[in-house]
Amino acid sequence: MGSIFRWLLPPRSWRVPVIILLGIMTGFIALLFHISRAGSYLTNDPSACVNCHIMSPYYATWSHSSHREAATCNECHVPHNNLANAYYFKAKDGLRHATIFTLRNEPQVIFILEPGKKVVQGNCIQCHEKLLTETKCLGNGKECGSERLCWECHREVPHGRVNSLSSVPFAPVPRPTSVVAPRLAK
Image (cartoon, rainbow, N blue to C red; front, side, top):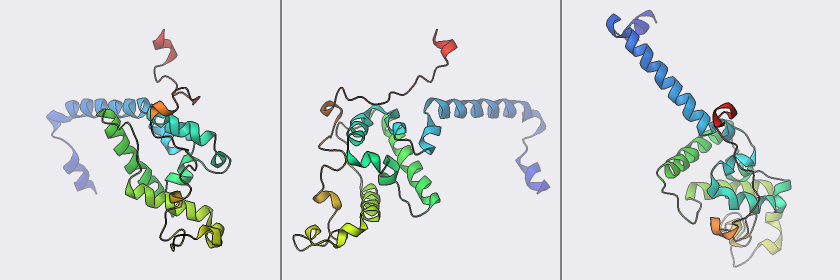
């Protein structure tokens, strides 16, 4: 243990510059964490999703749907098989979103990717398992939940036909607060 610690220590003449550099990097990471509101993504609060304005239509339509009473964004869009996988999926998806928005490469119309489809389908089945045996759910020779995606029939649940920012331009959604301290904003 002691030999590993000694191996990690920089030469004596480099210690002060290395400590200063580590302090700057730590401060930069803390500032990035604060500005991006990264802590809000660890919660189950749907308003965290509207930290990015492109999600406003989806928040607005969800808040007017029946799912608002029973499910948050995470309950549909994050796997629930175990806590580690849930946070891994959130981190992976969040980093992808952060990269897209930082590079200003966000699409006008958002489509769910294949890993997200599998998670949403699994969560639909988990919550609505009893409905899958009803005969009205069977159609076209395919069985619900195994061969058909739930949204093949329930296309407007819970987001309606919203596909872009222009579809609900004045939707009331929680606006993120400023990351600038009030004393600095004056």
